[in-house]
Image (cartoon, rainbow, N blue to C red; front, side, top):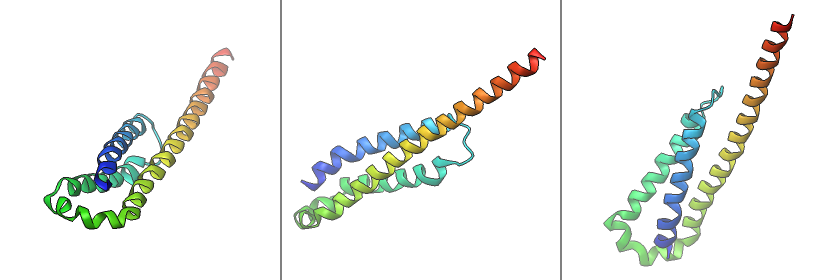
Length: 113
């Protein structure tokens, strides 16, 4: 059961993080969210995916079912970070839109003088 949930959830979370990485790359943010949060999360996630595919993991699966809450906490950790980064991305986009509007307003006003 544990590895089925992981096999389903981890790739979806990886895809979400990779999409966030791309979206943050397209912004001119003062904070490098890719280096600060996204890359470390992707590294951690990839290591869990490698562990899932290892022979050692498959041999331990009967014992691992007793530790299901530990696996659940990993998934919650990634989900929480993805949700948080999505909020930060929306905030960064709004901030960028405001800056662009101010610049445009300034250009328009300076040309009309």
